[in-house]
Image (tube, rainbow, N blue to C red; front, side, top):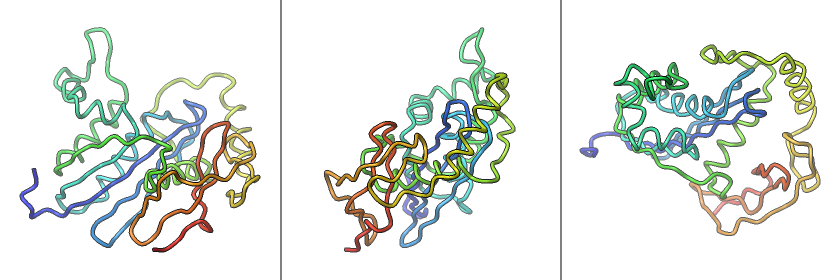
Length: 234
């Protein structure tokens, strides 16, 4: 528990790779008092779980002093591994889940724990694609980052690349880059290129001084797009 002297920071994170494994990205929204900050990065080839970890790492490493943090993620892999103590057991057992099996993503777990243990952190699982504004914003940041023109190398990701992966990845990325950011119903989804429909949130969720009156939704891959024109100020 915080003694009240620490800054109280709220962080939302999200990460994705499509296909999995494939090009990926992460998005982060940090909030402290009246201040907010967004972070994102894209990678050439990675996995969903690695992007979820990268997002949490980026959010925690962005803090310049010890803080009381509420870190929200829709990743069961991240949240459950910490709240149930699994990751600490893996570390105590030389990063082995069992005698025969090593833990995955050790490089990122080590980096995450180094940042995590500098702060007082409470991990909170949130349901993805449920209209939670900061979670949706992270999802959009991650999707945009995954399609960036200059993606990074996820150096710690060592899974062999299948023979067909290069051609598939190149084709997908090139196609997605030609699709502009959706603004209206009928525009194409940047992930699967299916027409988007307009939806209204079941419950208005205010964030600071604004909320989104509606959003665009892909029935095929269930991706949401928060549209600037739909933003309404209270």
